[in-house]
Length: 90
Image (cartoon, rainbow, N blue to C red; front, side, top):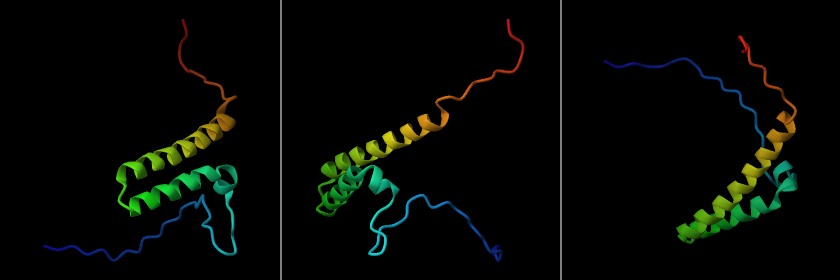
């Protein structure tokens, strides 16, 4: 028993990082955290050289920088939000 799928699939996504090219030399991440790019490129170079432990450490450092940017963004968006709990109160 076989099944076939003939429906088309359309996906829409939000691209958050514009790739760098000769005509586009920067993007928001490179402007805010050039060190994240540096550490990730170094990690890729070490992985190419099969220095896995060094590559993992450099990648973790780059991801830590990006996590910090995300935290700052969340704080900027939600720092003044209020919490409302519905229901009876004592």
